[in-house]
Amino acid sequence: VRLADEFLRSAYLDLAKKHLDRASVDSVVATTPNAARTGPFGSQLLVSEFTETGIPVLGIDYVVSNSFTWGARRFVSLEKYEELERYTVRPGDVMVTIMGTTGRVAVAPDDLPLCISTKHLCTLSLDRDEMRPAYLWACLRWDPDVRRQTQRESKGAIMEGWNMGIVKSLQVSKPPMDVQLRFEVLLAQVEQLSRKAATSADETDALIASLS
Image (cartoon, rainbow, N blue to C red; front, side):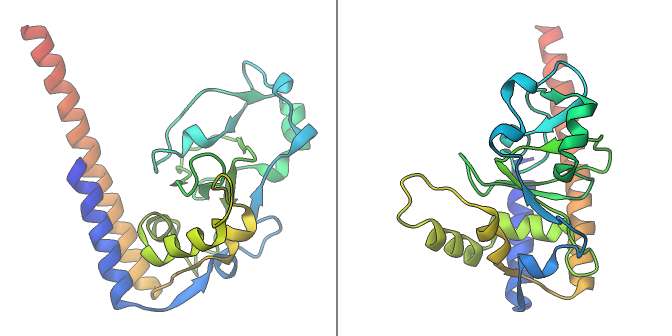
């Protein structure tokens, strides 16, 4: 499981070195309205408006591990969701943390239910004919040039923080689509192996515990 992440990092860096073309994040988001978004802000969503059931609200804790993981369960009512519909997160969207632990990134899973994000995330709906979510995920995680850009942008800040403008302006690796698709397949295969390995480890732990 540990080696899988390092393998993917090496695979990404190898591709990026072979294909030097770059493009801004802004140029690869979908042409639909609100394709790059962050919020809701201020009085748009108060803590007192969270409910015990309803439409999930995604925060940093869902993304901080660099893979989508269900965190603390927060919800809003359907009526409140309808007010905040522009912040809907859809399957395949790329989510980037821009507050607290910045620069963590995850791709919304295919089985994601109806939900919205918080102001601590920048959510990107991509033009998938230009950029595959899996490839952008890898670029934002591991590309040394992207890291240099973000360090320049946040230099001098009391606390490192990003905003949507910083994310959209990042120049990211953009190889040909066939290269991106090959990486996407590779990622899916490695993730499948990692899940099997993790399950096997859990079963082994349970067996040892029962033997003890």
